[in-house]
Length: 314
Image 1 (cartoon, rainbow, N blue to C red):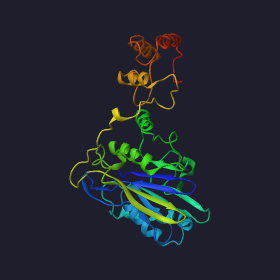
Image 2: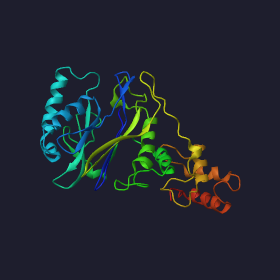
Image 3: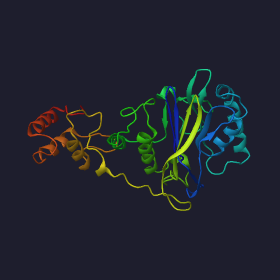
Image 4: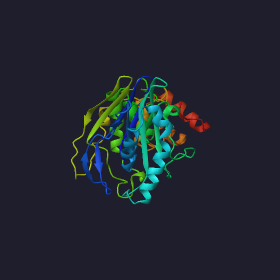
């Protein structure tokens, strides 16, 4: 799937997209900007899924004089056009669409971001199809990467964990956005991408930044990858040895890096979920060499807590 990240603050919205174009088999066929600026109002259209969605919606958007009018009146036309395209056999491969519209609302004098999705198993349980849904309920932040607990920890070690190191108003596209897109690039495409693409790496080419504010729309490349059309995308692994030695933000002062890292490396703490067996952790720390993570006093306390079944995140 394409990478789409929308960070909508109170005075500025940032959209991060990749540039790779690929066919139904996941083969890279080219690279281009995927966030399309709208000429008739201040904003952009982008998306994921079948690229019929953003292409159709861009043409539709140009028929409205304002972002606010577009949001109010466009959903029914998108649904009708999408259903007709499916019936006519115009959509090759998977037919799902996910369209993002990000623009400046003159009515509310602020940037706003919305997403519309066609019916699919990937919709949230309470999300109706073909309806523009605001990102305001998500603190103005959207990204499709489902980072597990360990990956979020790696983001924190880079100073780029959402909600911990940055918010929609403090987001820095370079300091926070590049690590986020690198993490997404390392993830394989999910089932929403279609059977020929799922499991492959398809995020690449370049990282495009689009900024929308009262002054207008500005776009440019802030990072590039050495990908070539026809070749598989091969993300570089994260160089963990170069990252600061900090424990996850939610584990508190009782978890110095060495203690947490040792538990993860030995499998006592599950990297993906951070779940662990208190007794197994106590046994690990009881056999740890002096100075490895905890002091003797801390290890004795951990063992005592384990016997009581009370060792948990702190």
